[in-house]
Length: 372
Ligand SMILES: Cc1ncc(COP(=O)(O)O)c(C=O)c1O
Image (cartoon, rainbow, N blue to C red; front, top):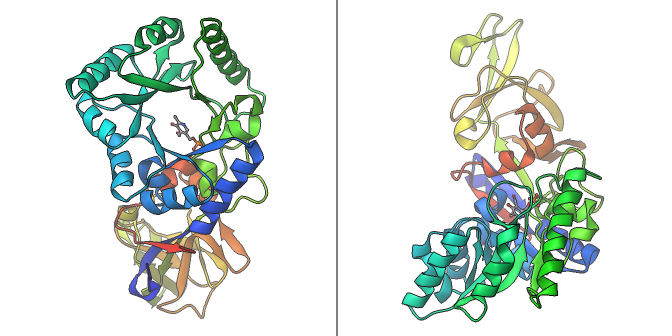
């Protein structure tokens, strides 16, 4: 689709080449199949375009959190294998069967309900068992799994995969992660001893891909790194991976204020001397947090956000860029000239992680796709 950024006062640019290349890199690095984790609107990047780009980069599976996300992918014509990683209500089983969507079996009783729902329509449901090895979230207890799998043999639950999730995959050399791997391996060995070999075994998220090659198994499940974000403070983004997302806006007003002029709600910022103050049309309603001490890029320079961030606007101190004028491009995340503000920098300001920054970018922000 053609976009004219002149139509927008603020927008996200998503470089689909970056998602394609990052996916291809993971595939090449691990030599395993890739499940692109594209839940939560592909971490804010846009569900359908991100899935298409990841598939073009070699992903054979897409992983979602909810069945609604998987159904949206099917409606968009995406034909790759789909796994719903999270909880699915049993009432959704008929649709999952009809659309060839694989569900996670996160609980024994719930799985029995899936089986009954499949039986009611005379269908067979593809499913992967989620194993609780230490995340304490979703998953079946290890000791229950061999008997459960035996019971399900020849049933209408086609269990063609088994997986777990790490609590600390982004920590290097972490005893807790080695314990999780060991528990999972022990289960796989016990199953094999009973003649059970799930066709697809998977565990590694982005951090584990780089820190625990022994957890690659048959397929890896990257999310963060697909979008060119660092998997964690101890696992920086390796060379070659490219950030996919930039956040831009235009200066919409420039004021020359006299000394003593209050800026924004609460008038907590008062101009000291004559000051040039710019306005950009973004605020906490777009996912830009209402915290002090923020910076953006204007004219290739860092400038301070001053005064309270409002719902739809915030103000900039423009003395460092005296030529700045309405219409100029402002970068909140991304590059301008030689300067860059990374998602991680924003996450640090907000005392959170990069995942929360991009998933919190509001729906009302237009997403402009580059290299479609
Ligand atoms: C079950 C599961 N697998 C894989 C991922 C991808 O993780 P990451 O974005 O750290 O690669 C997630 C994301 O939280 C997840 O919940």
